[in-house]
Image (cartoon, rainbow, N blue to C red; front, side, top):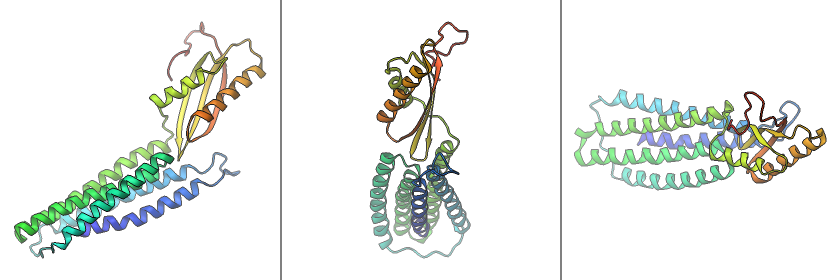
Length: 266
C-alpha cells in the first residue's frame, strides 16, 4: 500500500512537469527558435517516462529487501476500501486525460494518463496482495511484498513504453501508414501534380510538419510551378489536423529517367 501511495503521490510531480512542458510548447517562434518550442512537450513526456522507471526501480528493490523480514503487521480491512476507491478514481482520470491527449495530439498528456492507468493496475495488485494477507494471516505476508514488486514492474513497463515512443518523436521518426497515404492522395488530387516523389511527415510536440516533393510538367514556368506548390500547401493545411508547417519542393516529372521514383511510396 505504501508503494501504491508513493506511486499516486508521483502523479503530482508528473502533472506539474506536463503543465510546464505544455506551457513552453505554446510559446511563439522567435529568432533562436524559428520552428517554435513544440518539442518541449515531448521533452516533458520523456521526463515523466524516466521518472516512472526510476520510481518503479526504487519500489521494487525496497520490496525485495524487505520480503525476507519476519516482522509484519497485518493491515486493516480499510486498506481494501482505499485501494478500491483508488482504482475507480485513477481509471476515470486515465480515460479523461488519454482522450484529451489524443484529441490535442499531446504525447506528454498521454504519458501522464498512462501514469494514472498504471496507478489503477498497481491498486489492483495491492487489493489482491492485502486480501491474501488478511485472509491467510501473517504467514502470507510475502503476498504484500510480491504485490508491491508487481506494482513496481507495472510502473517500469509503462515508463519504458512511453520513453521509447517519445524518443522516436524527438529523433524525428517519420510517420507512415494510412495517415501518410491520405496526405499523399490529397496532394495528388491537385491539378498539375503528376506524382509525389517524396513525403516526410514528422511529429513535433503536438504539431505535424510535412516535407513533400511533388513532380510537375517540366515545361511549366517557375511561376506556374510555384502556384501549384502553393495550392498543395493550402490544401494540406486545410485537410490535415494539427499541421504546423508544410514545405513543398517542386521537381520536373520525368517518368522515363533511370531510377525514377515516380509512383513509389517513400
